Length: 301
Ligand SMILES: Nc1ncnc2c1ncn2[C@@H]1O[C@H](COP(=O)(O)OP(=O)(O)OP(=O)(O)O)[C@@H](O)[C@H]1O
Ligand SMILES: [Mg+2]
Image (tube, rainbow, N blue to C red):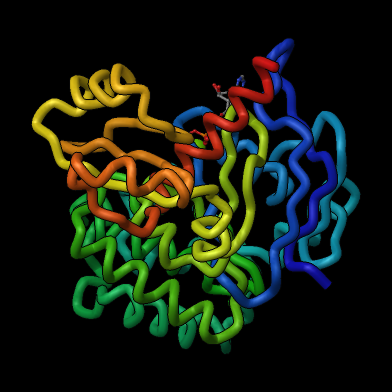
């Protein structure tokens, strides 16, 4: 059984299609990164999977349960951390956890033990009685995570959990995510950060509502045709124009920071010797550029 399986999952808002025929399969017990630019449909997809909003068309299952007909059972079995953490600022750390323990109907015998476990996990020991409003971003985020996994869900949906927090908190948060996944929890996480995506077992790229690629990070990198040359330059756009003027053969060229990335067929590499480029392994950023352009060409064709 797949942890998540969707077929042509679609959601429209009026005439606008936010999620467009997304078919994906997520294995149990791994970390699936859901990557895409602002407004590409990540949150809308997650909200359909969690049974918060209904699809306009298509279907899906979470742990074998139908996202439309069995959304109540799904809600009881999953953990969900929304982009805006749902914490009560005027409750203390412990009170927030108690509130969620009640929401998940944890028996009293289990409740205190789980709350203590979450406080430890979040590094909040000693701060149990502090008002949540006084916690800074990283702490709040770990408290929100603790609140969403009190009932030990088999699958956890995290919607941009590390937006707006400092790098140290991000690392700490990911440490917890790895531990959860190692213990068998399936995690689906949306992110803008390419470095976070690198650490996922599988990645789905969503763009303008369409799932344009889904594979392991190394599988995605291998799928780009040609070799990647990096040529440093203070003026990448000028260098690109110069390469175009010389008519050098290439599959693609784009500026990336203070460099030009060129995708070149193996047999044409020798034509670039003079430009002193460096052969590099593609990053997920390069992969994303490739798939987005490919998609654009398909649409234009
Ligand atoms: N309730 C709604 N009514 C109308 N349009 C909506 C609604 N929810 C989302 N949208 C639109 O659907 C598109 C996808 O939104 P969604 O929130 O899923 O994107 P996202 O990938 O999560 O973006 P971000 O990275 O900014 O969180 C956006 O254009 C958004 O404006
Ligand atoms: Mg979102």
